[in-house]
Length: 333
Image (tube, rainbow, N blue to C red; front, side, top):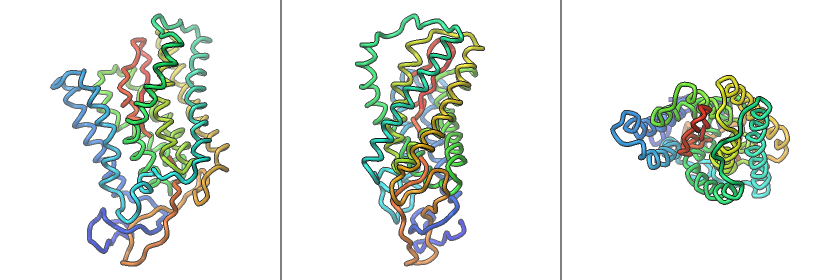
């Protein structure tokens, strides 16, 4: 048990919240273990050929529910469900502003990648969809991916974001990104990606994680990360896969490294500009807020702020979109 882990009920995962300044390592490890175990159990049958690859259309959406399931198991029972999962909305106005920031970010970075590719001599896509077809398809895919992303973001940018918030924004956001990528590893095996594609896929997941966390941070709710996740798997994919054609390995690495740097830079800008928008009672970007943990004795309950501090996942790759044949795997979160 952790420092003040004596729960009146005697159950390690059914305690009353009080304020603490360090993450509960036991709960964090339990969360990660449950989420990874479920995703592995769902993905391995496809990776080993026990069931056909066509089943990924069902496996991935089910896997995306595993972070939510894990959060429901390990969360503290003494606080409202929406608050513990980061699904409460402290301010609709701030959420609207964060949503606009998400739209701008997840359109601008892919367009910047395209411009870099054109400058590097990348050929145009040979079988690109028309602009009209994209305008019709992207909104539908956005809604679908948003529904799928709720299970991921309630766990990654909802519960885990707040649990790790005492570490500070950047350590927590990057740790979540690494854990999120590790969680995607079984899906990468099921997709049968090459080592080069797997690096692109998982590296993109780590790089985009701080931006989703930043959206969660400034809005005080995981719903902003849900929208960002949906845009990542819809608008970004539409731009990246329908403008540039196959590129050589050197150009592919240039595009990947440029994109990763841009995702991190945009996350910093969102925090920098959006920090003043944080809902009252929230924590300034980069701060180290106290988070709820177990009570040492009955009645030792301290008030817990409804606002969260950090920020998802996508099942990133949960988008179910297989990388283009160009060899520049497009990560879906």
